Length: 88
Image (cartoon, rainbow, N blue to C red; front, side, top):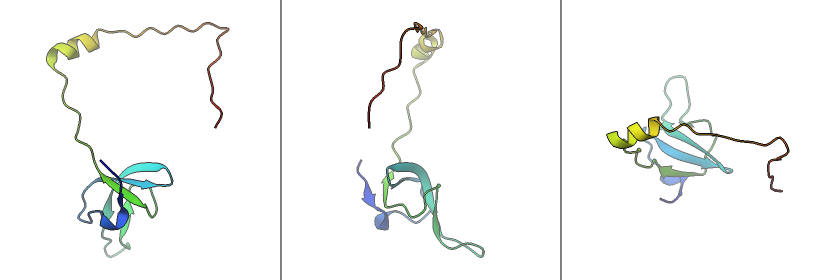
């Protein structure tokens, strides 16, 4: 999937991904009404691009659910270890 200019986004209430300044949220067009001006809902003011939502995840097969529910992750951390950081 690719990003499209916001001018081409559906304005029928369809949920889409919205983009502005490296921020992505799910949202939809609100055509306004008696109390509001038309606007994008989703937490981004004036998004610049949109993308259709991806397909939802598929359910896990029953055998895999059993295996996944019985796996207990283990974490170890030694006191003298420091997390790695990257410079921006």
